[in-house]
Image (cartoon, rainbow, N blue to C red; front, side, top):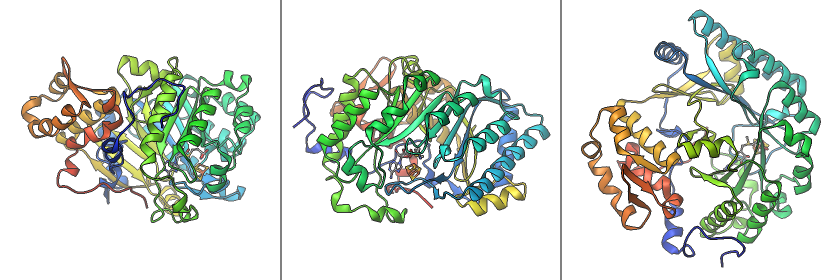
Length: 469
Ligand SMILES: C[S@@+](CC[C@H](N)C(=O)[O-])C[C@H]1O[C@@H](n2cnc3c(N)ncnc32)[C@H](O)[C@@H]1O
Ligand code: SF4
């Protein structure tokens, strides 16, 4: 039975058809094409050429700078990220030294080409950036001052592991200019926490978010995962209720991807303790309904924002963007990455840096950007990306906007795709609007399915796979 106590977005309990469709594997389109389609063999030379061309065309384009810090204090058994567990301060310092060298490399590249990048946002992700000590975080931020006006950014965000920071650490980040923090929360249930090797009581998170701390940051995000071992529909509803109590300004709600063939440590999770797949859509629907009932705006597929948050404001302006970190306020679509695994996107290109820290160190020491794969989008790819991102970010597709931007005639160009969307219209997931097509409330649970007919990489019937090194 559906939990009581909040209004329903759907007019009835999801049936077998809903559940089966929701559970179909398929991409979440944090990029198009998805990471698995990018090509190895693109490296430093292509990256430099693409950057130079991009800044020639768009010298003032707003840039989002992403830094990947791969270290964590302790292994979470569910973790799919590219991480290294280390508490060896010298080892971490050696990494920081290479990261500083990569920042220098980027600075010299800009100087050499007369580029003054308009960096508007900085994001520290990982891994766990807060696993660096205060002096290390300071040294990275000081070095970034060569590239950006750190005090004048639109956003400076940092991922935090609440188990390993103090309020003093948070005050230090604030003093350095960080104005948004994101906590890995995942689940508040003690049994679930035990099964994922991440003990993090509710009180720990609550106590970190003291009124003083809240004043320091314009936004706090919580990451929640559904589909973890021992989770039930009820237990996850309690996690959502506790989350509401702490009232973060944003919430990222993601389905746990169990991929022990890619991340061996996931074998520590007993598959038999995972919730039945039929329960997953119900957990998601419950959570969406509870968060919307609590006043959150549902953004894109898996993000929620309080109405006063920049993301909710962007949704009202219809300017939400999407990148590897999920939904964004859409202020800076062009990303430059630093650190291993980091991804970049600008103009018609995607690039990714090597996963392995030794390969990363070697490249930077040789004065090369540590890129190992990428993708150059054709004109057709650019059009399809726009369509897919419009559906995901704005829940509607304005045919005229695509026609004007790309000089195509929408019906003619996408005749087959429009026919493929008819079943979604018949099932009440899509409807015709004045300008094109609009996703209905039911359809919001299936936006990524609605995007799929536009994905040329799936048109040969090939299946989507979770990707990793
Ligand atoms: C870099 S971590 C967040 C910051 C910090 N390391 C922490 O855990 O507190 C990024 C997020 O990726 C998500 N994540 C990790 N493993 C995942 C998986 N197997 N499936 C889906 N999301 C996952 C989690 O929600 C996690 O909070
Ligand atoms: S979830 Fe966060 S803290 Fe846990 S291993 Fe992954 S990156 Fe590290």
